[in-house]
Length: 246
Ligand SMILES: NC(=O)c1ccc[n+]([C@@H]2O[C@H](COP(=O)([O-])OP(=O)(O)OC[C@H]3O[C@@H](n4cnc5c(N)ncnc54)[C@H](O)[C@@H]3O)[C@@H](O)[C@H]2O)c1
Image 1 (tube, rainbow, N blue to C red):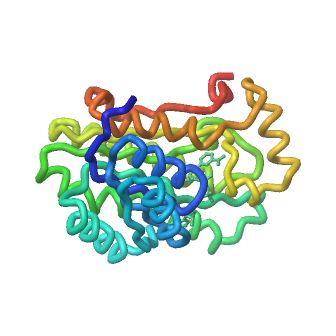
Image 2 (cartoon, rainbow, N blue to C red):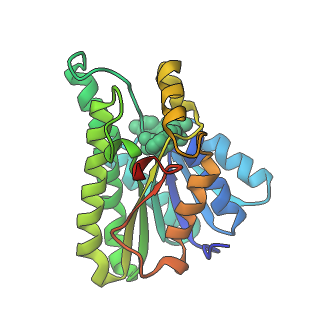
């Protein structure tokens, strides 16, 4: 499997859904995991410890730069370094663009896009110093095709993809790889924010005929975090049951 043994990995959004599963898979493969979230971080870390893995929980609000600095310092003091950052924390909201409130648009961009920016800004100096590092950001199918009712979400994820590609080119000479995984529709609590008919529409529209599982995103995140992908950077990998290729 993926070569992530002994890597020190910050996983945001580790309290739930995809991030929680990613954190578990890292730990199962011998990584030292910083489970970071505004909610559920400690519980996720405890579950990993109970299974014999190495993890700590850190309260992180991705929209606060100071919060990021604390998370990075905690990772270094506990595990000696930061080798990988997985920006997985995010929110989603289904609303027509005409009805979308300015505050809600700003909140979406703050968490999904600015939160990812803050994470990259925080760890990149460490990676430059170490002459290696990996960042895996989470995009979305919504950034590649038009999906019903997701204007601010699509914009935020499109921004994540463009920013990741830019940084990947800039930091490739320093042996730092930055990639994006764009999930299709995955079975996690985030889907509760969509009306059921929208979720059904998404399922029916997926060529694979089913929703994806968090584990199917996690395995790609682990590959892009491992030594096996050292020549892969600036890529956007869709894990979407074929929807983005229709
Ligand atoms: N589930 C899907 O179908 C799907 C599809 C495409 C992309 N994604 C993306 O995958 C990522 C994970 O989503 P999920 O489905 O696991 O959702 P989820 O709701 O289960 O998990 C999201 C996590 O992000 C955390 N979070 C929210 N705001 C935060 C903040 N300010 N600071 C720190 N943490 C914060 C939440 O507490 C939660 O634990 C998100 O970026 C989402 O946009 C999900």
